[in-house]
Length: 110
Image (tube, rainbow, N blue to C red):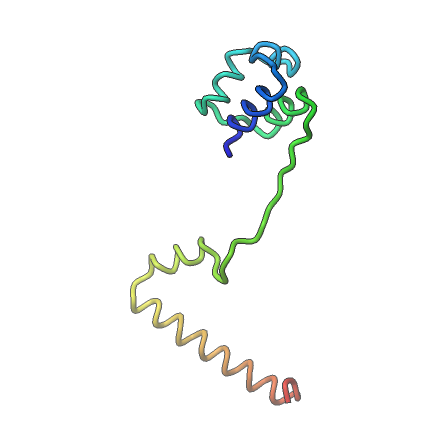
């Protein structure tokens, strides 16, 4: 759901006009209209002001992406040449071997 859809849906549930919501939130009817139509992306402060004016506290959350790999890291990796990717893989494999050896020397995982 977009911010505009959130505002419109809740405004309509309450039976408010765009003008009455705008007055409550200290903005203009035109600004509410642009947000609801998706022509303007409201800042968090603007969205919060509109939602509070309707009696709702907006809740911003974050959740981990499904999957093991970071999409930004994967995109950067795809931008490398096959030779560079091979070199990185060999380097990571060598590092894993050294870490395993060091762990064995201090008795970790034994």
